[in-house]
Amino acid sequence: MHDALVIALSSPILIGIYKDGVLVEEIREDGMSSDVLAEIFESLLKRYTFRTFIYAKGPGSFMGIKVTYLFLKTLSITLKIPLLATDAFFFNQNSPIKAVGKLYFVKNRTTIELEPIESPELIAFSLPENIDLKKFDSDTLPYYGIDAVG
Image 1: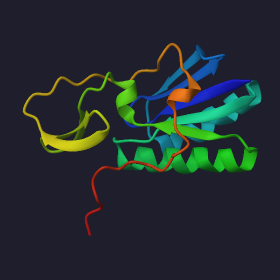
Image 2: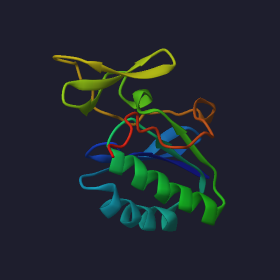
Image 3: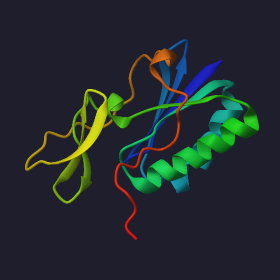
Image 4: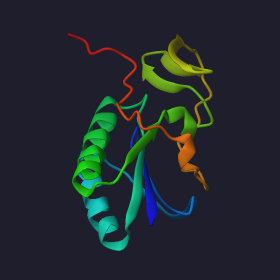
């Protein structure tokens, strides 16, 4: 049994396949999650039996978060495979994440806030070499961080 971890908050989209918590395959794909997730998972589902799906639930690209959540939630329900999540800071060493303009998301202990930052040190998202499922949460609802403009 394998675990699939998806980070689709920016380009490239990262997908890690884990066996017993160890990264055994890494997929990097440029493009939009709406274009590439189905194609990638069509291949993965033929090669692996999954125990869990995991995703970075935000903050990040609104569309990337939305599409990834809906895609993985649908797979989770139809294949009866649990879906887990965590915030995106887990995958970029807790560095700021671009929001809009000069505003960036930052994580202060347990809260995520918007802060103006002139020249932030941004660290790209990356897949961990090892994962522990206990570090992920069953609260999988997306975190957008900014309300929709109406």
